[in-house]
Image (tube, rainbow, N blue to C red; front, side, top):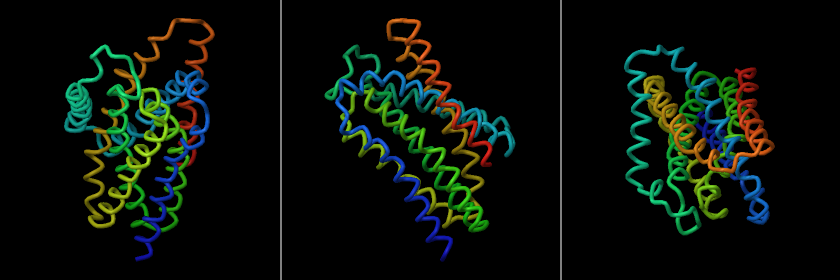
Length: 248
């Protein structure tokens, strides 16, 4: 029973990190838009860092088989199919509050899978031991701060109003509660679920970063200073993912 209580408390704490965007609610949109390109660059770094420093090693550790590669490709294909279904990306209508671009919703989709995995990991670690559960929760909190900040900026950049973006980000974060309940209820099946969810999330994040966000950054007029700052922002998004390796 104690593991259930601590697991749920931990996952709610992690979900609360999604509200970090509230720091930007009172900043004028004109000022916020000036930082959009750098926050999106930060998000790209965070997504790629997460995929290649955390998700990929996890896949390799559990055995990178043909089935794993197929699920990863499936994540990319599902992302493409969902985006085409939403029919916003290629409509040539400028991004606005009335017309959000589909990559914003694609990011929510991918983040839901990622948060579900976080819940599975937290629940599974508490089933092993309480100290391991606490250590895992702390590591995920460090992981979520840059990610949620980046996610919020992506939603705003995609044309979603700040308050609505904050709500969407929080609702998406709550999928981690579903993950922890699955982990606690099924226990031994968690590892099998991760074998599918981890590569699927990796494929989704690669698609979002490579197909949507990086092309958005390239739409800006090429200026040496701005391009250099974008690159620095991208690297800054990778740095926390590297530092997180020290906690594992």
